[in-house]
Amino acid sequence: MTASVGLPALRGHQDARDRLARATAGGTLPQSILLHGAAGIGKERLALWLAQLLICEAPGSSGPCERCHSCRLTARIEHPDVHWFFPLPRPDASSAEKLREKLEEARAVELQSRRANRLHLPTYERAPAYFLATIQTLQQIASVRPSMGRRKVIVVGDADLMVPQESSQEAANAFLKLLEEPPAHLTLILTTSKPGALLPTIFSRVLPYRLLPLSQNAVLDFLTEECGIEGEQARDLSSIAAGSIGRAMRLLPGEGGPGSLAKQRAAGRALLVIALSGGPVQRLGAAHEQAPAGARAELAGQLDAFAIWLRDLLAVVSGGEAVDIGSEARSLLERAAGRPNLHPLGIADAIQAVTEAREMAYGNVNPQLIVADLLRRVQWNLSATRAGSRLDD
Image 1 (spheres, rainbow, N blue to C red):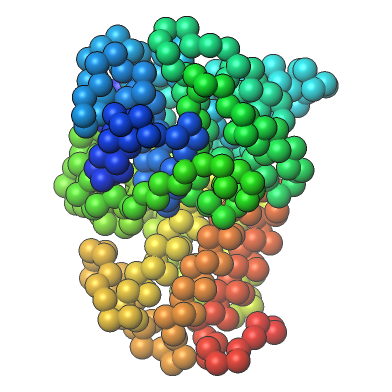
Image 2 (image 1 turned 60 degrees about the horizontal axis):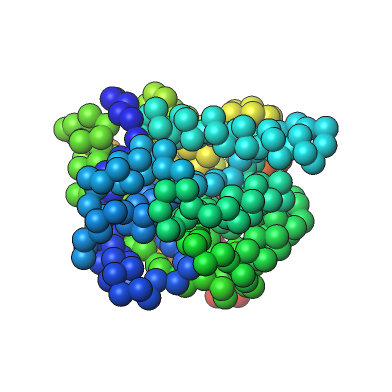
């Protein structure tokens, strides 16, 4: 896998690009917008494309020129009027002032990693979030006039993490004040895969743009052109990624990924087999294979693979086509699809349970407890009749 400097090329989202470019050219783009859609489909990359368009010195009708000095600086993540924020783990700090300093230092380090390697994927052992100290820094940056042009743009990725479960809403409430009275020179671009997790007062003050998953070909082109992945591996990755470049990237072996595709697929398959036919002993054994602490990125990768297996099972049960996963995997899914009481709604509930477990994987919950409870829930979802059923065991 090669590592190039700056932002990778933007893939897909042509309809959204066209709408945003028209609104920008017509002067109707609001100061605060929200790009939302599934995780890993390029929402922050599109946000930075829009930032590039807004500060471009010679914008066209369909997007930025990508040749002027401002465009080149933005592509290298170096433009002084384009600021990229993202959630970070809380560092140890003895005071509010120290916390603010350390968070900004951590953001600078992460930005440098993204400049140096366009394929960089951050992984954290602590749950990332936005803290009041970060929002105070953002507010200070927003209040200063642009240094190069007439516009300043702030991109706020994963904006839903302003309200993490374990903290108060003080960061989101502070950000709300900026949304209510933004400086005339400022454009705020928020992104999230969970718009329902935003405070209603924040959601009501942004114009939402919903982004769809990318096509399989778009993911395939990214893997081939940016990552140097070719042949069967690229086709397999693009097919199981469900339109998410981020998901495909996290299934790759090497830097930024918690493990190889084969390892995670095997772990996901093992979880599916236990959920379909295992008993309490097998569920407990699978839970004990997890470290009681740490390695949270590895667990999240296993859960991603588990969700993909369930998605393919849902396709088979519903009479659709699962992705190109090979004859052995298809045989397993077809045998599972023939089980009595297996219902599409139950599989959908199981996928939701895995999604919730993945979120907990980056929290303070013991990984062994996560897996034990998840397998119990999924096993019930895959075996319960849907009429008047309850999870009692």
